[in-house]
Amino acid sequence: MSFSTDIALDDLTPATHTYSQISLEGGKSIRNDATRDLGTPRSLIISHTANGSGMNATDRHLIRLNDVQEDTGSDTNAVLSGSVYLVIEKPRRIITDAMISSMVEQMVDFLTAANLAKILNGEP
Image (cartoon, rainbow, N blue to C red; front, side, top):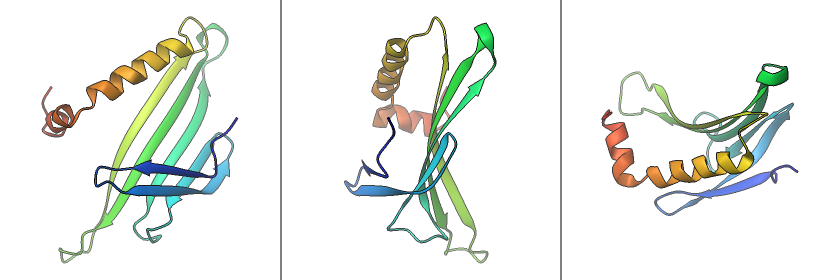
């Protein structure tokens, strides 16, 4: 079972961003927000890798959002990128899908606006 070609995600404004698949290779897909040009893309990347072998085999799943912006207010017109990652590492034994789901729910609960402000402020 795979994701649909397009994935719609809401932000805080509230606006919906539709990420359309532009690349699918092996265990990695890349989707771009069609409302953005190629010079300043907003992208969603989903990838899967396997690490280790035998009793130590682990699956790693990455979900990444990138937002590229051009700094038109400077003399250099620098292109800057912000990213948010979610990495799930799951050993193929002992740790269950239900345990991973529980940890993801706890992470979502933790990421309130107040806690995110503290994180971005560098608070431990």
